[in-house]
Length: 169
Image (cartoon, rainbow, N blue to C red):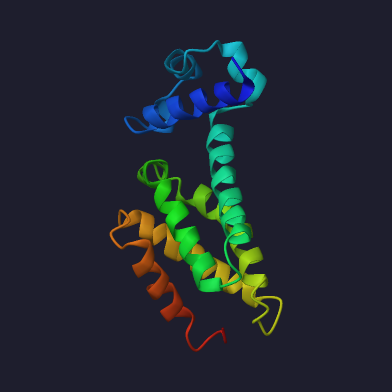
């Protein structure tokens, strides 16, 4: 079994367990049994189960960066691609919100969001990207909590409406 396969099995198993129970109620023994690996294999890859979650969130954040870089130079299109990417991770993001781990999502996406906003070159001072990243991440968390009721296109328009008057784009 390749290391990437092992990590994927562990991630899938953990989210399947989190879908049914709280993190504090999941044991490594239970996780490795569900993933079909040994305890030693788990600990060769991870320090603990929270690292599995953080790795998955880092993958999402990297996907945001990749989408923005592969997409056109149009910031609206970049933003739409990011909303679409997040919708693609609907289930794990909703599970984390249900298990009161929204703070982990926020931390994982915050720095990436600051970097995206910085690339706009539309800010008046060095604190504005942080201000808007906090607002953007808060909006993303709210979208997840609202079970992705709006489409990525609707979220783009809502997001753009929030920026109107504050940032010249």
